[in-house]
Image (tube, rainbow, N blue to C red; front, side, top):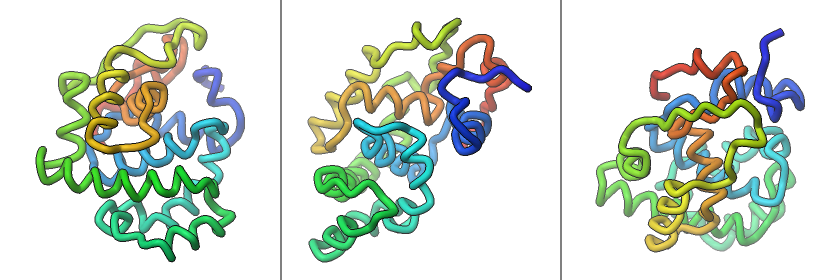
Length: 191
């Protein structure tokens, strides 16, 4: 059995996510929007809770098409509050719609969400060399800069800790511990 990061031993969903997705560089706008929304939804909850609801999120949030989510009206947002398949938190749902609108603005201004967000790591993944989970920070200078910039643009649920988790998830940062089998074998192809 391969050695994994300690957080990824909670069950098959966590293992599959860790082994195939976490830390793989992504520049795909829809995937980046998905991860931004899911990381925000995770605030105060466990990641396993979000992974269990991920398919429901994809259905509820139009497969994370920001143009469609940006048009969610009051009736649609009220329906999401009744959807037991997602985290029914009014502020997180409202933030997803607001963030979709901001994503569209970023795409217009920068040519893509990926182009904008990857600038916070100079366009290349940061490769750390942590030997234990205790060494992994909750936030960094880069995640604080990303958070400040996103908040200034009107994004919500994008604090520095959420931004750092997002950066880890989308491969902007390689935070697999050095003993994890994914540390050196982390795929470099963008998704």
